Length: 419
Figure 1: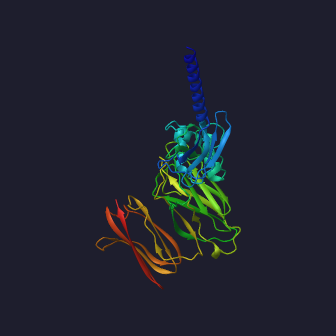
Figure 2: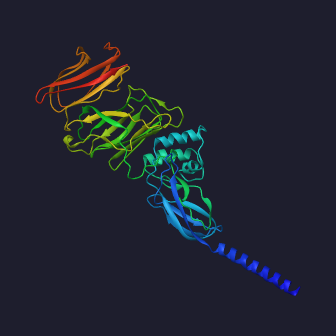
């Protein structure tokens, strides 16, 4: 009897010791915890240089890691338990443009719903709310004056995890976004994209010192737009005093040789443009120039873009504006626009010297249809507009031909289509 009691006591003692060792062993188990951080875009792009922090259930910081070039990180020798992951930092890969503005406008009108990360990204001015103040923070503060607020700042929901003795093979996946980027447009720094907006120069204008001139800027091929950012390189000695436009709410700013012209629609209907009027007209002051011959043409920067009503970037947007006289010219016949032609069309060409110029339209069997230009012209850029109805041009393909006779005579021909 006594023997049985002793045996039973020893059994329970052994059981308690085993349970203690099991619990203690589990409590003191340490593991490596692996993870990967991806952007909230369609491609789920891994993001480098994201700061990942690990906190315990009491909010104490346990460890901090930074993602590598593949978006991966590892917390080493972490005791088993429940923890919270958080993500922070800044990224240069997020693309914020007019497409995001259109998305924000749709969100403010209740047309679309944002997910959790988009909603965090939409608080651009960081006031804890998503409203028209965030519209202004992107359009005026960022596009016009370059003030970032939360643009480029990593946003994400914190995430609870459990770390045990098992190490993850592929790594936990965390999702992040970036302030101002609601479209999920992430481009790693190694990626380069071509400029979507093309520029053509029309007839040259003379610029003298202490002169105020107007330079009309036209948008071709786009009857309806939802927004745009046009960034110009302005030659030294030229200052933009003012700007007028057929659009209400257009803004501009010139700083360090860069002129930014911005318009973003605050409705969901967009703007219908009058193609016969300039998109905007620059009021140019030349008070600082010394010699006209030293003036370069105004050129475009890569951040220039136009979007349609749905926020899609327009890949065939084309703007035209006058060139400055005195600049070295090249003999060139530019593409007609629009092409195909439905009503009116414009042909631009430039001459490196004086020529006897003939600009003609032929049908595809080589018959002359009409002569648009037949005169002596000097060095410069020229623009010729015509109406297909006035010229009685029926639907089909035609050839427009520029022939210039003189020193270094040349001929160029291109195809146009009438619809």
